[in-house]
Length: 308
Image (cartoon, rainbow, N blue to C red; front, side, top):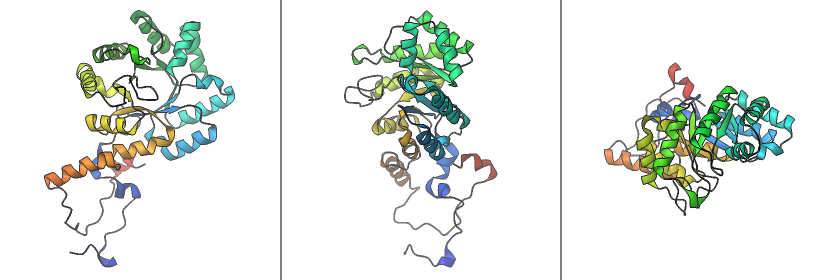
């Protein structure tokens, strides 16, 4: 049978390129902002205002958290930093400085000074971590309270940056549960910018699935509030395979946000191949069959929120 049809036989044009590219079940399943799961956290090492605006114009709908990594924000002209944070906040995206800056500030001065300054500059959240320093449990809890007093959303991070000082998966899960109990909105699983030798990644960057499963089993339903730092595409694909398209992922380069969304949605080799194989095995897709000439399904008013 030929795949060719006369123009008169063809269905009406699809409502959008979005509808043509994405399967109905993917459009229906992908969470919408403000997301309670399936968040994407970008890592920003120093984008200017123009580049920031360009990223937002192209991908704001797919970004939930925007971290100004390490201590980079202290080197930005303050007026430009304020304008940048306002621009991102206007897009409905949560902003926070990197946890290393928090740790450096805790070493040097009182928590409340740091939290107050974070709020005054226009950040919406703060990342509380002890990836480099050692922060006793009691002190960590007081810091979370301090951030809440400053009316900041709390994002905590669990794990150590030193490959030689890695906590067990059980310890990571236990701290994550405590942080959530104390009022953290999200808990980040340390992965650094390299994704090598820290968190749930081994010395080659491969995912330790046993560690991932242990953390998920201990954290339970609250696993939806975990953000897995996964800078590499193979790591992102592995976590999507384990948890589904609505797993929360962090340390994503701003220029790679749409590539990650394609990966989530089965529009990259790593996720399309397993989906195609599964559909073929179940008979839902037969490569030799020619699809019938039927109109492309259009979005209903209830689906409009899923359109980019």
